[in-house]
Length: 198
Figure 1: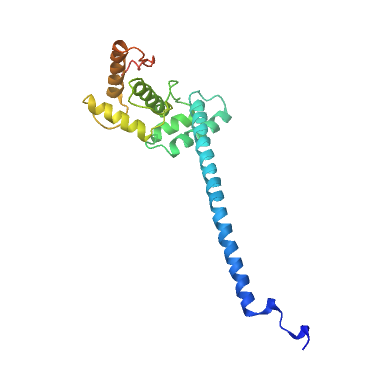
Figure 2 (figure 1 turned 180 degrees about the horizontal axis):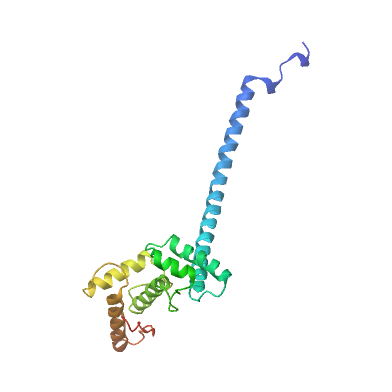
């Protein structure tokens, strides 16, 4: 019998099974490699979307602080009201929406409560850091470390222990920091004034 009469190895049943085993192994390897890449891309997209949302909110706020001057401004005002009202936990009343969109009402020029929240947290972080109770970043972000430090301070000073930098907590933080600064060298309290309405 000559060599051409032998069945080729590629056509044997064992070879086909080995081929599909290799394909399956390669597919598993590819999926293990692709999964972190897909997750990283998804995280980057979500992060950029979050940053974009903050930019849209800032832009919407600036549009609504000015009175309407033209039809173009009215169109921008409609967009701005929709952006602010879309994801807000407390929606604007229908009457306010109509007034803002028409230009008959404007937002106050003082910083809105949306931004005051971060400023309030940052101020509390600065006071807690000056007192040696917090060691994280002073960035206005509500983190677990900040929450725990503030709750500890609130309990020690017989305040409502809610981990929120409310008016009473900020006043007490300011007072404690000022007292500590007068009695201990090297303690530097934030110089920011609490709003007079507090």
